Length: 572
Image (cartoon, one colour):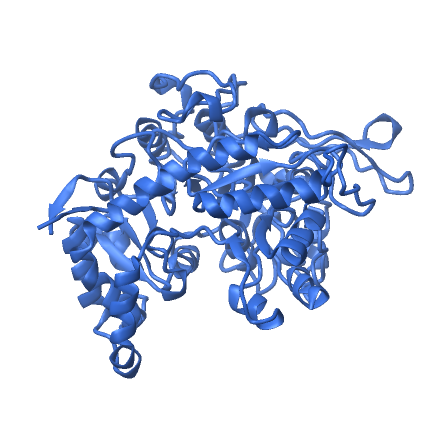
């Protein structure tokens, strides 16, 4: 049984196996779930009983149209229906955003939710990945991210707030400033799927600001907040033109009857929902404190309903995950298959204290043994390296972000030259290949290259005059407000509002001269299976041919209703 269960993880790419699959391969009883980021306190038992009593009608009859269900949700959240599109889960909306609004390139900080990297790569887009630094607690510096976007010439920018898997939080004023600095891009997406669990600000959402801007979409989840991942519903908020474009592509009945039933029952349960969020936030503080007491375990500050932890030296995440599952019936999220992470990191969902005590006991036995005299889990010789800036990020920065081997597109059948940004980097003395500079970011550690590898000469990249040269920006690690000092890592206080000069100015309206290599790029749709402008397909990033499995340890690489938009309250 144990071999069957753990083998399921080796057949997944950027995600974990489903609870249904794990249950089928076990004795029929699912494990304690610290993997799926779900609200454990909502719906209440009484709400589940109500849904069970209506089960026959729910599964027998067609749901109402998506417009009807969306109108009810908008009434609850006090949002104009013309600015909202509901999808069968946020992943459906991400898919349509990619197909409709991402033309050639997308920037995203990594590590993050896997669909933001995999979805555009699967459709041949260039994905510019901005590595979050472990040395800075995985905090996203928006000024440096903006410089990175300008240097790469990216057309779509994504920000996840809080970020998954680390729970990093950005204050509202900083996000709005970033949106305005990127006003010339094709699109800016702010993914607020976990924002309901944040308590650093009273109203942290930017949905109101997004509706007033022509190129901003805010993505929201419902399954995570309401503890109902299986129903598959989420929504986006944007100006009417953007929202309408996505909504026009969705099927009339893309939402199921369970989703309709839950949306229409929510207005009667606002108080219970608010209490559930409050309890998750309290549990997060308690869980952070208990985990921080384990020797060698690092817990990063989080504003999500999960905690990102680094295992002690000598502990390999896949071994810890498998032993917790088979020996203690505890399911955790090992993050070695997340781009920008490694097998030394786990994401642990916030759960009630009784479950946390079981997790801590299991970790003590797996990591230290009963005597706590040392790590009981040896390092695997074939595992990924233990710094988030090595195995996955190093490869992705040097290949996906513009310095991949020349001829990659031709090998994929493109027959087209790569732009200068995608040229192979120079190999320095001693056969060491330096990673390309990315907007003043710290360089990944140089890797030795076999001597038989050809040493191509560096190809200078013309820079349009309208694109400002990136300047080094000191990194800042904002301390989330409201996070108790005993459970947080030392960090400077949250910075004041950055001056406008902190963000690179958008290019002038006049068209900039195009680099000679880019002028050679053919126009029109990218041929099937060919990465756009020198990017990589998802299979190439994972180091596979698209048919074989990815490595198991990661890629080499009346009541009042607290509305989900963070805009006050509406009468129930």
